[in-house]
Length: 394
Image 1 (spheres, rainbow, N blue to C red):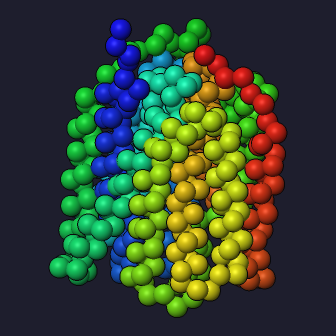
Image 2 (cartoon, rainbow, N blue to C red):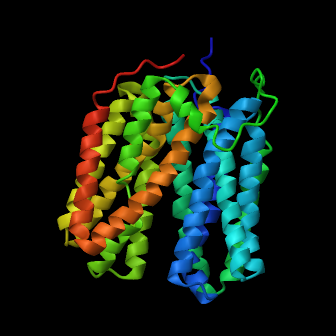
């Protein structure tokens, strides 16, 4: 008898959808601050814009994840979420009024919030507990590949058409539109609506899942969120090498190098996680994070920085997809989107706090102290998680 494929049709389609969507987003990510300043946004207003956008994405992940489980549907949330993100790209080219830019950027992040829990649950539904590492690893690999191709396309375009930001936003709509078209090829087997679920859940109902969830879910998620409180934006790593005297082009090149390492390592590490266990790979990733941040506190030579960013790519590959695979293995299948949505909602809040806290430490004490605080926190969380025991659901 022929063994069923581990990487199914739906998994390939969802991975390609993420590749094209991230390509569209990352075409704009490097130039967004420059564009916003060119149309009159101050640094403070840019910060407010990004804060509102990310808060929208974070909080909506929990609500729409719960709604997906309640209705027993995944695909409508996936399709709507990717459609909103695609539409937001040409909207940024239409008008330059601050309120309109806020609306377009928030719409993009709302799309991410709508689709995240349902998409990850759909990936989980296509896998077994023994194959989730490689399934989520492939998805992260393809998603990150988009983060490599997108900036390269943006650099190439701006080399020939400097300052043509509006046209770049229109071009970014093309891969976004391809992603939406691909979602039409996904096939879903609708699940039964929950008993008594005629009414939609309240916006904060997802948070009740934390209270009602299993002890192992709370223990694992608690550790992940403590780490998130000290896992600040990658901007601080790039700022460190910028202050070491690297040019803007070289800094962007290092960021692309990191994403290439991440993309290449995500699937193989997913395979390793399936064979050796999610916990071992994830804890190993946290120890790499601690090594990188401790190294950043004292590094000054270019070869050392390159080595640290290589290790940072391995860390990301060992943790991002593996964390979701681990979570879906310890929750009931009917709660998958809620479990992912609850975690990612709280993670977004922690990420905002982390960047603020590390920024304050950087300003008040110095970059070395900021990096060392994160390194110590990661090592402590690794020690905590290594002691956890769990029994996966079938």
